[in-house]
Image (cartoon, rainbow, N blue to C red):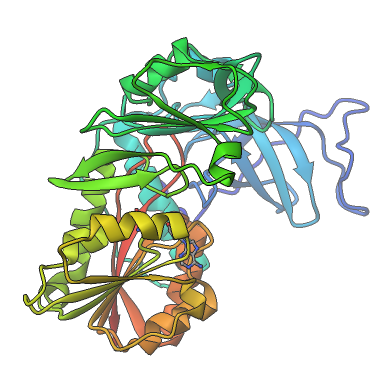
Amino acid sequence: MNDPSEPVARHDEPASRPGDAVAGAAAGAPAVVDVVRDVDVGGLVAGGEALARLGDGRRLLVDGALPGEVVDVALRSVRPRLARAAVVGVRRPAPTRVQPPCPFVAAGCGGCDLQHAAPDAQVGLKVGIVVDALRHLGGVVDPPVEAGAALPDRGFRTALRLGVRAGRAGFRRRRSHDVLAVEECLVAHPALSELLAEGRYGRAQEVTLRVGAVTGERLAVLHPTARGAVLPADVTVVGTDELRRGRRAWFHDEVAGRRYRISALSFFQTRTDGAAALVQAVTVAGGDELADAGRVVDAYGGVGLFAAALARPGGAGRRVVLVERSASSCADARRNLSGLDARVVNVAVERWRPGPADVVVADPARAGLGRVAVDVVAATGAAVAVLVSCDAAALARDTRLLGERGYELAQARVVDLFPHTHHVEVVSRFVRR
Ligand SMILES: C[S@@+](CC[C@H](N)C(=O)[O-])C[C@H]1O[C@@H](n2cnc3c(N)ncnc32)[C@H](O)[C@@H]1O
């Protein structure tokens, strides 16, 4: 693919037609029109858009384009330094462009935004996104990024967050709050596809469907209420109004032979095989330091996915401390880690007062660590920090902050948990200088 640091910057003359200047163009800026033809696009950037330039040199982010393509675009917004557009025609397609395999993409489903790229090309595109972010936002000259092993690209999602319209669940349309009812979903686990097609969700406005891929247990959390919902008898159905009143509801899943209880309000990875792949990638990134570690911190530990894999029974010479803000996740983690030498601390990482550690694993939410949590990681004195990031820009920012605290990026691996979307999951190894 194209080097994302060198976006191709050609833009042919705009197809100017009277009266089609875009409202909101900067005062004094060259007149722009709503359709621009023959735009050469470069690599994808964080957020999944492709980078190009308008004829006046302005950066243009193009939705729906692939690196190396020549496309016609409709401008959506034009600001002094940045314009945004969506592909309306492909003049020269990339060799990796395919017809989206799911018919609901053409119908406007916003669930998958990368189905126009061949599945085996998608992880390479994501490596490009991460390299671009590390270079331009993280200040890493030659980012050491590699692709992890491929995971299945169909029927994998064990969690779906859906809108509800007239009692039927569906995905939000792209860039809209409208709900598109779908009878089947390419990426949903079959046990959830069934609930998409046949479930009736009563007076709910939103529903989160989850299934344990190994156990088959299903959970539906309906917001604001489960009243009027009709679902198969095996599904545990709960409304957020009931959760607020103290009802507990959960399902179980198994990852690499370990069983996890996952409550309605607790985070878990959205695919079971992906959770296993992440555990493996974290173990690899931790290296010899992790293999030999006596003191391990699992920051943002959730229900204990990594801690359970890394902890040992008491007396085996390793203690894991899991730090997690959610009370629900901590309650699950205590159960999931029983019998292991592990302590669960229910506090925000930023407010935790760390003790010394040999290795820190940190898996923050999309916003990443930020300066305060980076200081917490550094205060442990760990020789190695393993960072699990689900946002390329946040990873790049954290890489810069960790660098300022003496931790150098040694390796980053893209584990493609989310085929057919631009979303990334990256496991990175940082070594203290
Ligand atoms: C991406 S999830 C990772 C969870 C776990 N590592 C896993 O893989 O299942 C992030 C977790 O961080 C927790 N969290 C978010 N912000 C936090 C904070 N400031 N301090 C501690 N935990 C936080 C969330 O509740 C969630 O469980």
